[in-house]
Image (tube, rainbow, N blue to C red; front, side, top):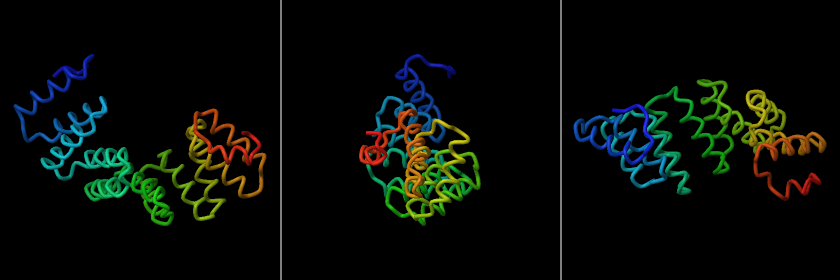
Length: 206
């Protein structure tokens, strides 16, 4: 199979031909799912990833992709369950734990989010999204110093990571340092992050 394709349809056709030759190869189905995702065909992608895990029930990456499709539909519980399957298949898979933590955060379950995100960071200490989500979870718990520490670690790795800058703005505002809050809100905005208008107004930045 060619290594590079200019046409995604040609790539999909070649993958289907490979599957016809090797119908039990989970990797072919996984690659087909990724190809469908690239053209935002979520239904066909889901079918391909489900077939991938049917052929290889411990293919953790496919469960994560299925979770992403659920998230795209707004199905938080589906996303959570698929990522739990991924973590069960491969306990040291940081991405799965990071996604589990993020879903718990979206559901307002800060304690569960912190526990999962700590596991993600145990296996990948430089996982920026997990650090930012951990900062948000600590902020939800009112642990402002811990929120700042986690978010500072994230921006030390990637200064332009908007969610972490926004976390810092929120935490410093709650600590009563409006100037530091403004500084981080500006950095979040400059990164392209959509800082809530109400918060900007509170900071006199609206």
